[in-house]
Image 1 (cartoon, rainbow, N blue to C red):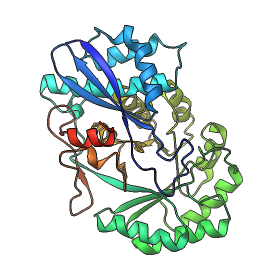
Image 2 (image 1 turned 90 degrees about the horizontal axis):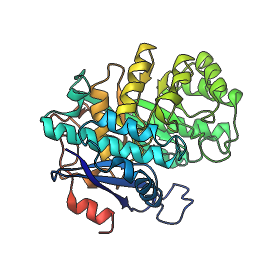
Image 3 (image 1 turned 135 degrees about the vertical axis):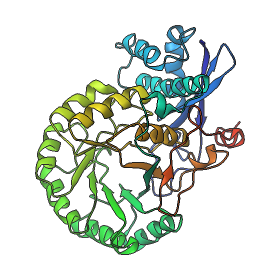
Length: 371
């Protein structure tokens, strides 16, 4: 079975009211790719990159993927990586290859009648804990946002960006205190400073002092406390922080993760399947991290396609405990014919059908892509 064509499908939706959209009112950063084979089977991948960049990358890659195997994901996508070292390695080209790789794993699953997690090596769990991921707001409103997610069945919560680290230590603590009081003592709470934001103004000492404050509120991990390229700072912070340190969402390809793993720069590694190179790369990264006793929690600020890929990756990984679940998120639940549901314990069930094991909503995709 060969790849016949690939197209980009931009997804549009109202930007979060509390998100600092920098590229217009309807910031377009989620793009699906549809892979069509010469035997009529099709599949979707997801790319966290604007559609014009994805379309340009697909045009660049077209001579390489046209006629390539549609059911040898690792070999086909490695061929794309190896032939594009000089054409945007690590940027939008790598992101686009991520979406292609995801679709090829689903096609392999369709052809073999097997779920992706089995093709990756087997299943370690039937269910996994999703955490409701949301942006921070002022302290007096934070509890309300969290309670809305708790009413939907979530038992783990991550809040990030917003005013945190951008005003005062007093406000930071007030936000965390309001969050913990709202969800109670038994649910998981995570904090994301968002240091990959433009011109992040804090360094190691701020991060360490903030981590000490977070410990008082039983925060599970502190994410992106330092700029994403500051590996030396992360090494020191991970060594001395009283709470677990997480990072890695902007890194791409397995080679970029090697020093972070080998130097134990984080307690929790967060590759994003829609950027890192797809399921192939993320599974390799996860196995190497496991050899170094590092937990992998997929970064999932993307789409429903990315969420399902994360479920399969987490099923096939010994060192997995959580998946990110954006709420509210127009690009997630509207893509499914039957959206994922949480059980009474706030867990998501791993799909067991061929490939992704879910059905996408043609109407939802049509609506979000404006036809």
